[in-house]
Structures are given as structure tokens and as C-alpha cells.
Amino acid sequence: MSKETNVLILGAGPNGLTCGAYLARAGANVKVIEKNVESGGGLMTQELSGFKLNSHAIYMLLSELMPPYKDLELEKFGVKFVRPEVQNAFLYDDSSLILYSDPNRTLESIRSISPSDVDTFKNLYNNFKRASDEFIIPATYVAPVDPLEQINMLEHCGELGQWLNELAELTPREVIEGYGFKDERIEAALLYLATMFGLDPDGGGMGFLTPIYVYRLMQTSLVIGGTHQMASGLRRALERYGGQVITGAEVKEVLVKNGRATGVRLDDGTVLYGDVIVSTLNPTQNFKELIESSTLPDIVTESADAWEYDETSLFVVNWGIVGDPPHYDNRDPEVDKALNVVFGISSVADVISHFEKAATNQVPDGKTGHVSCPSIYDPLGSAKHLKQYGNCEVLRFECLAPYDINWTEHRTELARSAFNTWSKYASNLKNANIRVELPWTPYDIERHLPTMKRGAIKHGAYISIQMGYNRPNMECSSYKTPLESFYVAGASTHPGGMVILGAGYNAAKIVAEDTGLNIWWETPEFVKKAIENGYLPEN
Image (cartoon, rainbow, N blue to C red):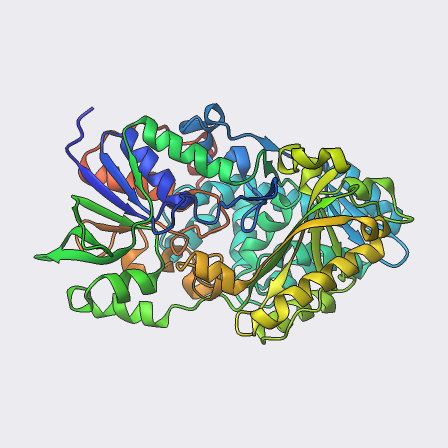
């Protein structure tokens, strides 16, 4: 294929690599420029003393549903998923709620603690699954639609479309509470799933995201060998078609001539020229730091000034131990198999408090959050050379956390508190030989990934004025910007973050259309069906 179109992509995270791989196969000469010495962005797997620790992203909500998985043949490049049957277990004083990938098994768990809520959960699950499968997931892999046009289309799509419009006026808490569960523990568990990655339980207009978080967090997968395997697969796909990744190279300036982006200047003075520049960085970096503001319309620079970063971030600890997997005392044996075990959440008030403490800069106490032993399902993560001393496992704790506290003072203390809390539920952990302990704070997130300013894992808050057609602003919502040949494709664009590859996938099509490159990939069947059913406009 012709390599006449030179494309420079800023950032070798999941969206940058995805966009680059599609465009390289489409016939472009692609260079992806990455500040860090390794590609992957949030797809980080650090190996310490033989343990593979996923410091950042670990849970794959859409896994094999992501179009790039099939289009780029990622399985051939070693990207394989495992989906545990036991997804989530919520621990209470005298019982446990277990959520399975099989909804019928979940219904039996609910029946054991609240028989009167079985039909209520079944109704919620069916509604959330249908909303996700028929509209929310398809809408993830197309450019955002003008809000008024989208509302009008949904209004004419029958009961489901009208209900989806109603969700856009509600908070996540209102969506869950609207089902009227009799046992508040079930209501709280579902709200925790909806908000465990920082969605405000009382965020106005954000109810439309509730179905996909709740539904897909009961269908979560892990990447075998660690999430960096996905980064490696995406990079190999890019390089297979002649693309190149330049690591250890920080972009200091986007060059502009006659209203057009023409290249970039690196921190060492090197200049690279391109016909197209695609940035996966955040709006502050793109429109305040890299591009001279006089070359942009005021509305773009003003929206960058007004861009809001997440109120909360994440605190994560990974441990590598010599010892047995957690065994939860006096619990259903299925709890031992759960991908995620949640403690400290028995009421809606607990969920609200967990969020509000992080949003108001209170130090977490390690008594609320979710824990996992990923090596149960991904044995490649445990240290093989320590097997002579006994069984080895990887453990993980995660909770919402603030950015503006002294993490140097609190990181070790919080990690120890979380482990001690976990040991109260699984007392065998008290005998574990901890070989590695790696706390990962919001400050560490920003330091390693500056585009996640203030530890914002989604590059910007999920609030109604920063979603869909307004992400990052109306002028740039279709991945094009007012600066000719400069495109955006990161988590600060539709559909956002969470390693779903949507922004990079959607931007690649726009760039290919604008430059006359070969669009070699087919529209996914689930998107075609959503278009046929009137949920989305024709491409």
C-alpha cells in the first residue's frame, strides 16, 4: 500500500495504538510518539520479584466485544481473556451476596438473602442488558450524535428508547432506587458497581451510564498475563502494517503553519512532520500547552480552561505473597472464587460516604473497597521462581481516593490497613509471606501518566456537560478540531476511558475518511443492528 500519508499520533496508550494500527493497515505511514519508555499508557503490568502486578487497569468490561479485538486479530498477538464465573461477592456480618456472570445463579444468591427481591433484580438485569446491548455499546463505537438528534431518535424507538431518554435526567442512585428493592444491601451492591470507578452516585444526568457499568461488571474479564499483553498486542498489530512507536520522546510543541498542524517538536529539539496529527492527550495539554492559543478559536481554549478533572481517583495496592489464596471464614465457598470481593458496603449510605470522603480529600481508612486474587484465574501473574517456598499468589485492593492529600505520609499506612481489614474476613492471609507490596496512589498515576491530571483515570470528569457530543467540547466532538489536520482521540473524547478502545477506533475512521485512506474494516454487526432499529443514524 501507498505510505504517502504521514500520521503522527501523540500517546501510545490503548487509544493511540488502536488508532495507529487501523491507519497503518489503511495505508498510512504512522508514527506513535510516547513520553514513557514503554507503550501502553494505563495498560501497565509491572514485574517485581517475579510477580506481575497490574498497577492501573485490570478489569476489561467489554473484552472480546471491542471491534479492534477481531479487526486487529489481537488473539493472534497473545491477547486472551478469562471471564470468571463468580464475578462479585459482597460481604455482610451474617451473609454474602454473590453476583455471577450467569444471571440465573445470581438470582439464587439473591433468593437466599431476600426472596422478595428476585423478580426485581431479574427485571433490572434484563433492562440493563438490553439497554447496553442494543444501544449503549453500539453507541460506543460510532462518533457522538448531536444531543437533540439523539433524544429525538430514541423517543421514536419505542419503550426502550423512551426509557433511555428518562435515564439521562436521573442520577445513578435514582436509577437503582427506582426499582424498589426491599433489601437495601442489594440496592447498595448495584450502586457500588455503578460507581466503583468514580461515577458520582448523585451526579445529575449521569443515570444513562448505570446500565452498562452494572451489567458489564457482572461480565468482567482479565487479560491473561496482565493488561500489558493488550498493549503488546496492539503494538504488534501496528508494527505488522509498518507503523512505528517512538518511546522516550516527549512532545513539547505542535507546529502550526497557515492554520494547519504540520508536525511536532520533541523535547530534544527533534522535529517530525506529518500530514495528520492525532493527539490522545487531555484538553489542557492539547489546547493550552502544545498549541499556541492564538491559532485556536476562543471557544476551544475557553473550554480547555473550564475542563473539569475527576473529583476522585483510585488508590490501588498489589501484593505478591507466598501463601494460599484468600479463604473467607464461615462463608459460602463460592466467595473464595470471586473475581472481586467487596467489604464495607451494606447500605446506600455506605456507597455515598465512600464517594464523598474521596471527593472531599479525606484519607481512606482501608475498610471499604474491593479486593481480588487475580492469580487464581491468571496463574501467569504469580512468581514461578518462589514456588520452592510454597504457593504464590497476587493480591489486589482498590478504593476511591482523593488527590489532594499527603500520599508520602499515608500510602504505606493505608496499604497496611487494607491488608489487615482483608485478613479479618480471610484469616489465612495473616500467615502470608508478603514478598512485594506496591501501593499506587493518585499522585503516582499522574506522575507516570501526566495526561491523567490529578489522577483522573478517564482524563476528565464524567459529568453531563463533558459527555458525548460535549467531550471535550462541541467544536472537537467528532474527533476533528478547528485546527486543520489536528485530531483528538483520547479518553477526553467520546466515549471516554476504561480501556474500551472506542475513541481510537472512532477517530481512525474519521481520519481515514478525511484523507482518502482505505477503510478496510467492516461496521460491527451490533452497530448495524442499532442503526436498523433507529437508535443511531446512518454512518
